[in-house]
Length: 110
Image 1 (cartoon, rainbow, N blue to C red):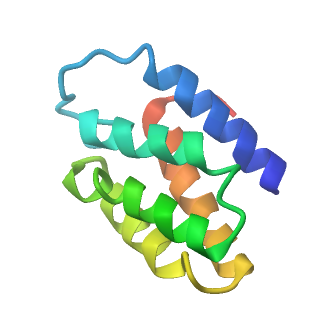
Image 2 (tube, rainbow, N blue to C red):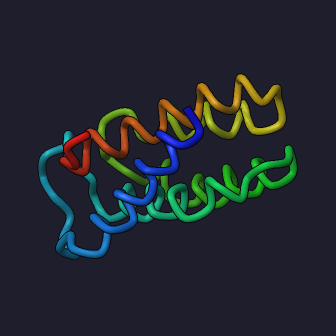
């Protein structure tokens, strides 16, 4: 599962580089704040091995996720923050959910 999320995160970072700067009207697509949140998550996910590292990543992601109008991203960011200092299983579920929302909104094929 960790490898799957890692691959999804790498795809998100690559997609984020090619998305135009203007905010889309469609809430099913990543807006600029959502793109930043997903890119931060994708960049930091693999190194978030400890509780403290997960908290730091969640804090970074949540600098942008609450500002996003992308459907479900703000809620997923909040769930990521809530799970950051819980069990690794809780973190993994929240991380998987956040990554899936990022992928769905970015249009990356899995």
